[in-house]
Image (cartoon, rainbow, N blue to C red; front, side, top):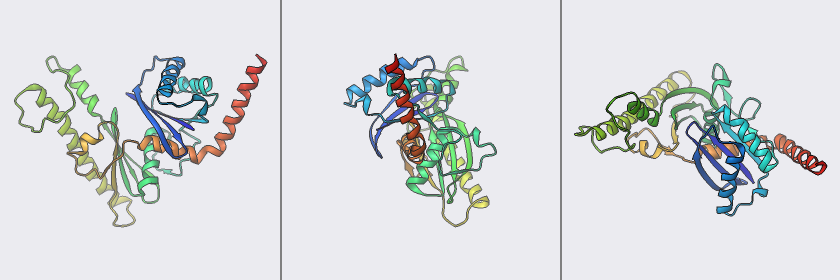
Length: 282
């Protein structure tokens, strides 16, 4: 079985795969101060609650945009699974050509989402991830990562309104159903939620225009796939979104694992044997 970690700035999404089948998935808060043991105990309890044996985990794969947590999860993988985790980054096979000026600057989560979306839906594509930041990525018909746009996420915008003003409260991210609002809370909710929908509509339309003018090799329009915790809510008002796929990143990690398992699977078997030999020697 495969253990997958998708580490974002706000949340860590975990998944366990049996082959291509996602057995279970969970979401927890990203906490840079937690140790490998603290994360290990949480995972152990989640496994027990869902009837999963920790000994059945054969490999671990990590995608992270929080470098400080990378070491923690690597240490966790070795201590609790006897495995050196695969980490999405330079040297990992994705099957996708990265056209960014500096490919190392592309967040691992953006690459993972792009790989999964192309595998599931083909190209061309626009992939939107509603996380701490809202990211827009464009993928060509030839499986090329062309680039994209990064905008402040809904939660960041909400926090900024609360923290940078003297009298505005913290509000729940819900659309009030109208924009002529008669109280402060609904006024903020309308501006945040409907304003973000407007951002999505403009950037998607502009991205489609740029794609048609610079990259298109046919008349096929890019399909727009959204993922992330707020994707469903935003999609209700952003008509440019064709598909919401909440499991896109986890499935992308499983796809990338399959592309790399022959190399890393051998390394992990050797690593497991090395760890076991050290334990026998005391």
